[in-house]
Image (cartoon, rainbow, N blue to C red; front, top):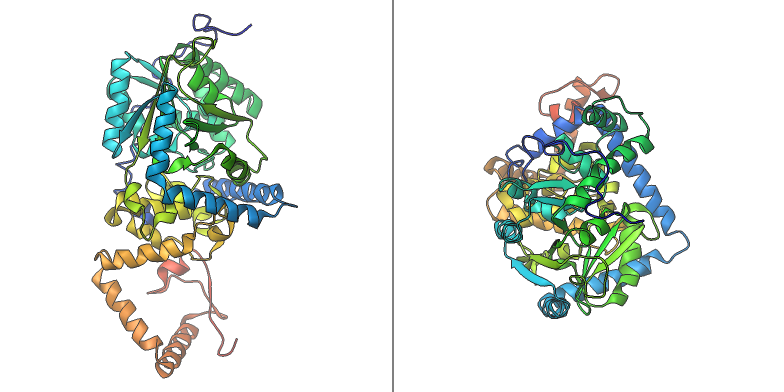
Length: 482
């Protein structure tokens, strides 16, 4: 027998059980530098191990998923679909809006983060919403939606297991797909035992059961459900969600109001495009052939339907996206948020997602943050890369992240965000190393100087000028001839 809103069951939720005293805000965490944030993560060895282990596992699953498949051809097709959709974004958005409104969906447009917060808050006021359940949504992280709704007295419950933990810890997601990739099972066990007021078994099944019991009450008593959207299908007016836990369907079907906050770049022209994009999204995100739940939502429930929301709102989020159309960085909008570039990035694997200072980490974060937040706030992230190109090789839609990062470095210089001392140093270096004689002379001097201070050919002391390098690794002094 299915549960009803009156048959809430489960353990009652203590007041504030999942609302920390202060929810981290996307607009507050960029007051420190990348180096300072990275140092924090690197000072937690267990976090570094957890991130490395999780990303290794995810990358291996992706590789295994596409064995025996012409992966490169699939990626080429996906790139064509995304490039076509973004190049014709205004037309496909108009088509989606017409189709969505024909289904009874109420469509809103948010030009920026503050407008998105205002629109969602106003919907909640108009609908007398006091409790909200949320499915995982990176767009809501972009606009700091939780903080905005809490400020007007609305209780918000994250229902994805990882986001549930992040919210209860007062933390932020550390990965696009796996929010608690930077946390360990022991940390979750300690948190849930504290919440339960008793020692819980330190086993995944028991910890998951505890979260499920708590969330059941929230699902059945919520006035509104808020979700993101993985794709907007232009020809049908549908919002598509991919989830593994079932919380997405409960969030969109049980409460009387469903609000979806979706970036305008998530548009795809046709349903059949999903035959290419879905396997790539799920395969690159979790290594699955397809996620447990693929849900297409098209408006409120009809008269003959037994469940679904009474009203459905979709807030289309721009927030800097349309400004990229037709420009050098338009291909950043092709991203389908699979997280694969994070899994292979040698920088992300060491410092984690929080070091990037905003919502997105890894190579895609190093591109999107300065584009959406500006060079002053996020420009330094274009240098948080080895330019190894691993992200280019794994991206399911073949975004040339390497080229975009170099382009952002050039833009940072053109906009005067690079310190004068750095400009002069690189100009001098360029002058010296562009002349063979000076190049050979400078490398000879450097080699000789390093030999003097090295021991047995290795420099491990915190030497002047090299302190930032040798503090974390040994430097092998090069031989005259390799």
